[in-house]
Amino acid sequence: MEILTAIKRVPETGSKVTLTADRTAIDTSSLGFTVSPHEECAVEAGVQLVEEHGGAVTALTLGSADATEQLRSAIAMGADHGILLETDERWGPAATADAIAAAADEDGTDFDLLLFGNESADAANHQVGVRVAEALDLPCVTGVKGLDVTDGTAVAEREIPGGTEVYEVALPAVVTVKEGTNEPRYPSMRAKMQARKTEIDRRDPDPRDDGLELVALEVPETDDSPAEILGESPDAAADVVDVLDELEVI
Amino acid sequence: MVLVVVEHDGGVIDDASAQALTLARDLAAAVEEPLEAVAFGPEAAGVADDAGAYGAAVVNAVEGDDLDDYAPEAYARAVVQCAEGTGSDAVVAPGTDRGSEVLAHAAAKLDETMAAEVVDVAPDGDGYELTRQRWGGTLLEHARLHADTKVLTVAPNEVSAVPTDDGPADVNPFAPDLEAGDLRVRRTRVEESDVEGVPLSEARVVVAGGRGTDGDFEALEELADRLPDAAVGSSRAAVNEGWRPHDDQIGQTGAKIAPEIYVPCGISGAVQHMVGCKGAENVLAVNTDPDAAIVGKADWAVVADLHEVVPAVTEELERRTE
Image 1 (cartoon, helix red, strand yellow):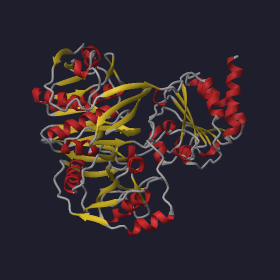
Image 2: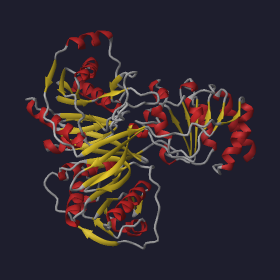
Image 3: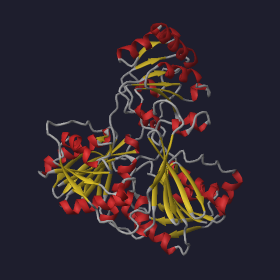
Image 4: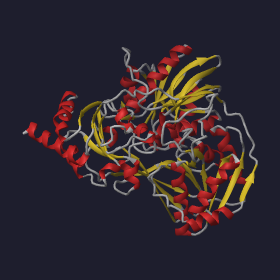
């Protein structure tokens, strides 16, 4: 089966983020970059399905030339090809989806499955996968945490309170996955070295206005006032229970 | 018209829908437009009381055999037709899995922009000035939305749901004209979870462990067992170590919790983790490091080894409840 996985280069932010002087972006001068977590699971899902059913995985991203680093990460995980829709501009979700749909269409490959992260870690727009499905007139299941393919049908599971709901859709289809769908593999050094040699297919996407105009970013203030220290030994247990009692949760 | 897609269980709307209605009600007042709701399923008309209580004048009840089970594209088609039929300037939904999915389809069908995870919105000329969450709420984006029909989802647990004194909404049965393919994605079946106890997202008390547990969650589970409506969660580090399933992960890409008290044990408090627990009303951290980020975010802290503190708390609880 032929699988397309769309990924996104995002800053790694394990600590508090700071903004650029014009407040329109995260200051990445001291940050590394990574593949958005849900999308890393999308790549892993695609690679696992190809390992089971045969075929190939194409990783695609829209972004700057630097995003080839993330394409090579996907290739090191087992993707066979990489496509970069190269742009230095900021793209909104509708424009991004249009470009991905156009690229999937013009690729010449009949993709059986297009895998996305449910939402990107940074922008959290929750819509690129759905919009690609709409543009290509394909069925779409979002927020998936379990995925299998049997006899041309994708069986997708997603969590609801108290259980799991199951969807079965005929391929070709679009599926957006959440972290937890699988455990993304850590590529071997050999795979990373090979990925560095893989040729990336670079293309120029057509931009379009997205209707949502960024004015400024803001880091919300948080209450960092010191906690009341109840104790520094197990003797604090009584005070902990007092707190639980005061809150009427016991 | 401002149109709000609400989710419900047997006619009772959920918290996220009440929050979305509240934000939409304020928006409708600001643009001097009426507020209506749209609900789906066999008991859609039953939301009249709840939707009315949050300011909706009318509930468009979308019923029909084909729509008894959730079908995102069919729901989106109905939302689009309802919005077009009512001449809606804005379509709003809670930013839940379903709300986000249905509105993304609707926005694509309308060929309009969708602003996700909105926490504040106000009219700005012929568009909206809005604030939305990014990075799970660690960043706020101020933006202007220009569209004929403004489509937006409301970040759950970020807007206080405030009822009004209004009575029940009128019910307008609405039968969408579905197109071929609208029902190609439908929920096939539901499998009940074999996990016992209260789900993380609904727990009044959440006790969670991180790297500091060294993989031993037994004491945390015993404490949670002693507390009513309590659940055990974990940090991403504990999941990555293979100590807990991903379903237990609290954070940006895991569960979002909103308990009355959150008790993180041996969790450092990385930004991604704090995104998942910022809905907690109170935080009591147990950590050996007084400088850990989580201690700075907590209301109370015990600076000691969780392996000694947590069993002591359980013992104290047992002693007091004997």
